[in-house]
Length: 165
Image: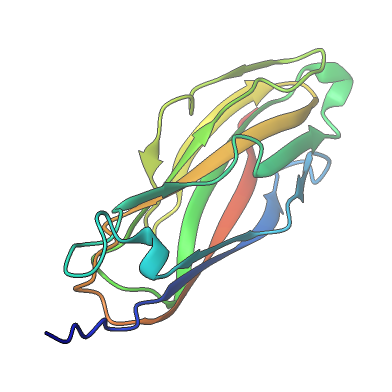
C-alpha cells in the first residue's frame, strides 16, 4: 500500500505599522517588533498523514512592544486603535490581539487584556493616560486547516494613537 502525503505549507506573515493621530500633535506611538512569521507544514498535522492541521497558533506574549509618549505632564488621555490591512489573507483565517502587560510609566492603562478579533476597520484596542512604555501585545491566528490552499498569507496590523483629551 502506498501513501501519498500532500505537501502542506502555510506561511503567516504579520507586519506591524504604527500611525500617530493626535489633536495636539504631541502624543506619539512607537512600536518594537520583528513581525511574526509562522511556517506551518506537515509537522503541524494533528496526528500525521490524513489528519487536519493544528488550527490555532499564538505568538510570544511580548511579540509587540508599544510606547506612548509626548503627553502633556502625563495628563493627556489617549486610546490605541488597531486594524488589519490584508495583502493576501484567506477568509477562513481569523487574527486576534491582546495586551499582555501594562508597561510602565506614570500614567494608567485599561482594556485590551482579552483577545479581540482584529478586523479591517479601526477599533479601540486599549486606552490610557500619560506616558507608558513597554506595553506588550500577543497575537493569535485561528482557522488554519488543510482546506486552505498552501501559500503565503500576509496581513499588516496598524496601531493608531488618538488623543482623546
